[in-house]
Length: 334
Image (tube, rainbow, N blue to C red; front, side, top):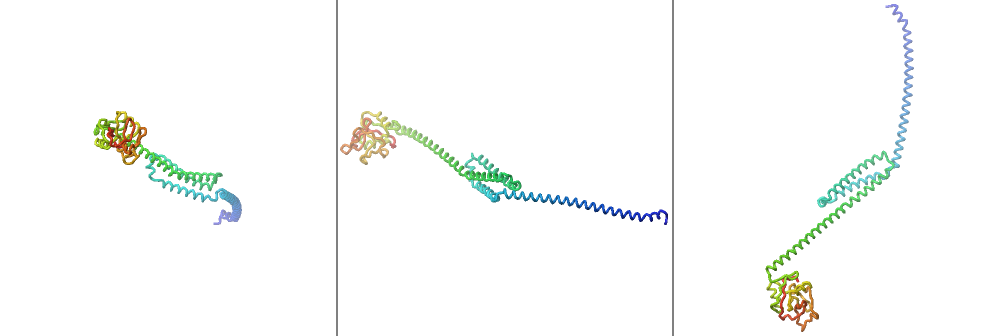
């Protein structure tokens, strides 16, 4: 419909087209400006990023140079050696005799304490190794000093462990020696008590079986001052009484016997009938233990004086066929 309004829109259409075209131009220019600004901003950011990357690379190069200058050339070798030493230490601990705990019960607490210390040391070494790995990144100024100190401690610990078996063996030897000494002491005391008991039993036996014998000094004797016998008969008479013709063991015993005698002459069991000059005890069959000759004796008068008599506390060689009184002893020890 051709109305005035439609006619107005037709007239205004070129204007609207112009406005639209101009608006498009303005919008295009604005978009180009925005794009240009964004490109400049992105380029600035990219430049800053590249600058930061360059700085990071320089820092990395610097750190790598520090690593090369501070880590010892044999660092890896030393770490491996420390691990081998740890393995060796564990081997040493396994070699310690399993029966030590039983033989040294009183040392059990010390061993447990030592085991705890060793475990703590091993854990400390593991931690130190972990710290060493971290040191590759941090590299403290005293790294070399601390590593050397650790190696010294490791060597010291290994030496201490090496001495453990020797020390324990020494202590076991001392304990065994102490035990042996105690056993010897007990045995000595038992022997002493046994000897005392035997002496007591011997004394009681002598009192019961040989009532005619009397204690003189430390032994028992029978003195016959009533009858006289030749030497051979004197020997057999003492044997029939359950004893032996007497011999004297020392001066003290001689004095005790002499105090019991009168001024008569008595046969002793000492003689050299088997070998001239070799005086033996008839009771023991051994060399006479004690001799006290009168002045000038023995003289073996006429070559026939082979038996020994006791006169006034002194000894004299005489002919064995003479008849003298006798002294008998209860034992054959002397």
